Amino acid sequence: MTFRPETKMAQLTDFLNMSLMGTPMPFWLVFAGVVVALLVFDLGVLHRNAKEISARESFILYGGYMAIAFAFGGWVWWARGAQSGLEFFTGYVIEQSLSMDNIFVMAMIFGSLGIPRLYQHRVLFWGIIGVIVFRAILIGVGAALVASFSWILYVFGAFLVFTGVKMLAKQDHAPDIEKSLVLKWIRKHFRVSRELHGEQFMVRLPDAKSGKPVWFMTPLLVALILVEIIDLVFAVDSVPAVFAITQDPFIVYTSNIFAILGLRSLYFALAAAMNRFKYLQISLAIVLVLVGCKIFLVPLGIKVDTLLSLVITVGILASGVIYSLWRTRNDGTATP
Image 1 (cartoon, rainbow, N blue to C red):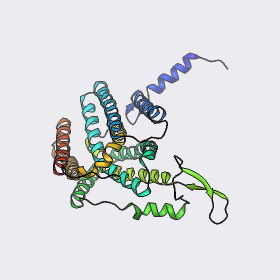
Image 2 (cartoon, rainbow, N blue to C red; image 1 turned 30 degrees about the vertical axis):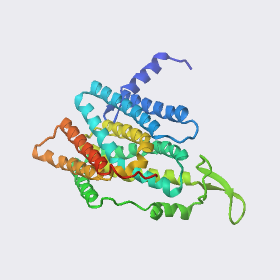
Image 3 (cartoon, rainbow, N blue to C red; image 1 turned 180 degrees about the horizontal axis):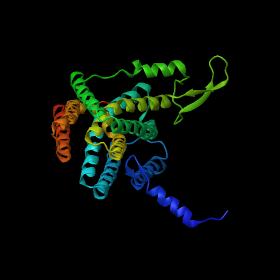
Image 4 (cartoon, one colour; image 1 turned 90 degrees about the horizontal axis):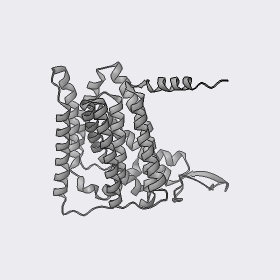
C-alpha cells in the first residue's frame, strides 16, 4: 500500500474545514487543547500528591484560571467579532455567579460524608471531567431544541423567571444531605465503606457475611457522585440562562466550562466563608428574572444590548457581594 502525503493532507484539510454545531473545527480544537492542558497541569504538576489547598493558593489558582478565560474570551472577540466576545464574557459571569450556590452545597456534602480538605481536590478534579461531558450533552440537546423549536426559548425564559421568584421565596434554605434520596439509594443498593481509604474511590474489603473480599465504594466516590448530580441540578438553571444571552452552542459551552474551572479552583477560599455571602442569593434571583424577562422582549421588538446586559449583571452581582460582606462584617466564618 502506497503512502501518499497529499492524501493525508487533504483529509486533514477537510477535517479542519468541518464545522461542529455551526462553529469551525479549529475553534473547538483550540478550546479542547486549552482545557486539556489546564487539567494535565493541575493534576500532573500542581497536585500530583494529595495536599490541603490553602486559601492563598486557591486565590492564586483562581487568578490564573480567570486570566486564561479572559485571554480566551479576548481571542474569541478578535477572531469572531465584538458580539461573540461580549456574549462569552456575559455567559462567563452568569454561569460563575449562578454556580456560587454549588460551592455551598459541595461544602455540605464534604462535611456530611467526612471528607477532609486533604482529599477534596481529588473529588473536585474528577468532578470537572464529568462536568465537561454532561454539560456537552445538556448544551447539545438545548441547541438542538432551540434550532428545531424557536418557541423553546420562551419556555427557558418562563422557567428562569419562575426559578428566580422561587429563590427569593426560599432564602436561607439549606438542604439536608443525609436525607438526600440519591444518598439513601446508593447506600441501599451498593456496598459503601464506613471509613475513607486514602485517595481510593473503590476498595476491596471482606464481606460481612461470607468474609470474601468484595468491592466497596468509599465515601470519596459517594461524594463524587453527589457533586456530579448537584452540578446537573444547578445546570438546569444556568444553561438556559446563558441560552437566553446567546444561542451559539460554542459560546454557551466554552463560557460554561471556563467559569466552572475557575470557580472550582476558588472553592477552598470560599467554602469556609460562604455564610458571608448570604444575601448574594437575592442578586442571583434578580439576575435570573431579568434574563428570563429579556427573552419575552424580543417579540415586542425590544432588543437589550449585550454590553448593557453584561454591565447590569455585573452591577447587580457586585451589589449583592458588597452588601453581603457589609452586613456580615462582624460575623464569624464557618468551617466546612
